[in-house]
Structures are given as structure tokens and as C-alpha cells.
Length: 184
Image 1: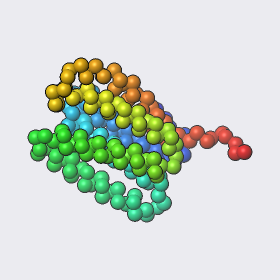
Image 2 (image 1 turned 180 degrees about the vertical axis):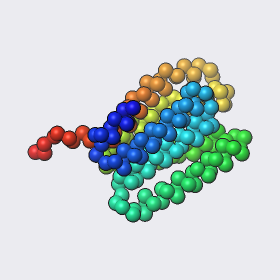
Image 3 (image 1 turned 180 degrees about the horizontal axis):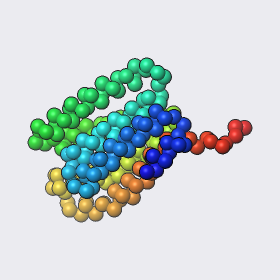
Image 4 (image 1 turned 120 degrees about the vertical axis):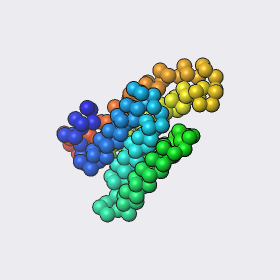
């Protein structure tokens, strides 16, 4: 809801579109992960959230007809095919999709730090909090997937300590905070 409200205060409608798309994918991923505990489809959808964030940064950093921006359209299509094949064919698809997710997340942070022009610090802070949340999720799930000690699951509250602020910061990162300021 916060991200939808920023539409009226955003600096760039294209930037807002990619942000809203990423947050939309995040809602769908959370539906799978939080409400149903379905890890494979949840992580796969989160891959698309990070592709949308990357597209946001690339589109915001390039002019029209930018080769880098056009390249990301191809990445979207390839990612869709790869995720679909991995998710439905491989037995250990969760590990492959998780590795793809991690690569996309790291790429997201690097590209956002390099190309994003609007509210870069706000976005990077949100992404770093999001990464801290995911590290806690990884630690929380280690006992389930690799038989690590059960006490690691005690990290669960930290997931939400990092996740909620990360999503708020990302949701408000499209807003134009220069409105009403005078240049000196």
C-alpha cells in the first residue's frame, strides 16, 4: 500500500513501475513462503522480484534504447525458462533456485549501487537489510536442509526485524523527496 501511495509523489513513473513490479513479486513470494511454507515456488518468485529491481536500476541509469537495458529483457526470458525447468524437473531444484536467487540478489545490490540514480542510499539500505533477513532465513533453515544444530532456528525473530524495515525502505524509495526544497 505504501508503494502504491508513492505513485503520486514519485520522481519517475518508469522507476515506480519497476519498483511496484518488484514489490508485487515480493507479495506473491511471501504468499508461498509465509502462508504455505512452499519454498521452491516462493524463492523462484523472489528471483523475479530481484530481476525487477535490477531492471529498475538499469532502466534508471540508462538513456532510451540503452543496450544494457535491452539486454535485461533477454535476461527476464532466460530466467523464466531456467526457473520453470528447474522448479518442475529437478528433485533438488530448491538448491539450484536458491543459488540463482543468491546470484540475482548480489547482482541486484551491485547494479543498484552502480546505476540507480534516484534515492540510491535508501534503496541500498533497504537491499542490505533484505540481505540480512535472507541470511537469517538461511541460518533458520540449515537444520532442515543439512542437519545443522536445531538451536540455529532461534534466529527466527531477526528475520522480521530485518525484513519489515527493508520492505518499507524499498517501498518509499520511489518517492521524490526534493519536492518543496529550494536550491541554495
